[in-house]
Image (cartoon, rainbow, N blue to C red):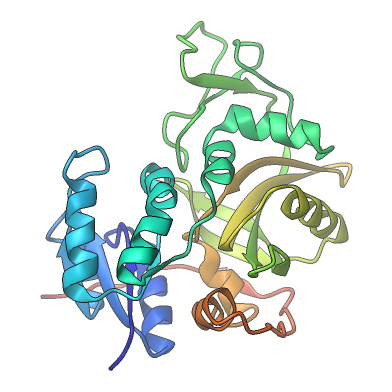
Length: 299
């Protein structure tokens, strides 16, 4: 019998690649979403509707799904649920023998809060944009949020509650796909230039080689414990210096390019994070380009 992997937010435009990678690895994909019209329902092997992230019955529903469908692995991907997945990790693993691919709460809390991320970067010597809780800079971001939602560039006075202001940088925006093994060592560090971004999603990218980025990623991973696939974001400035500004402690929508430039990372979860076997990384295909397009599904 095939093992089952549960994923979240399967209605997103980038969810298809993850579903296909799971199926290509010999697993059944159980997709979840708050909407019955989700694309995940059409692509996955099984589909379940879940309540919204702030609904009080969400975690009781999740527990029922885990037990009823005999889920083997869970790959959280929704920023709003990461803390609660991490908090319940030991409970679910001990009771249902399900493996949840999530970092610990300390890591999640730092990465989910852009102010705490900034302070963490400063403490360990990672170059990062100047940031303030006051409106000192014209780039305004929510302390917690994903994609480009509620990010603005303005000099007009706004309410800074739960917001930060940040130095506006000019340069190439880069996302780094990273797979951290059971010993918190980054097995893959794959920078990809985001050459076209729509609604915070990378739809056009290129794998690049940058030794300085690799050096900084190793320092970050040495100082904060990560589990499995994560991604970080930085800018390469015009003078070739690097400034990091974000860590996403989860699988990302643009990781299709990171997978394609190395290998399918889904089997690595079972091989290394669960079975504790050593990973021998493949050669990274630097220069590989990704072009994304819409594909229709008629039902």
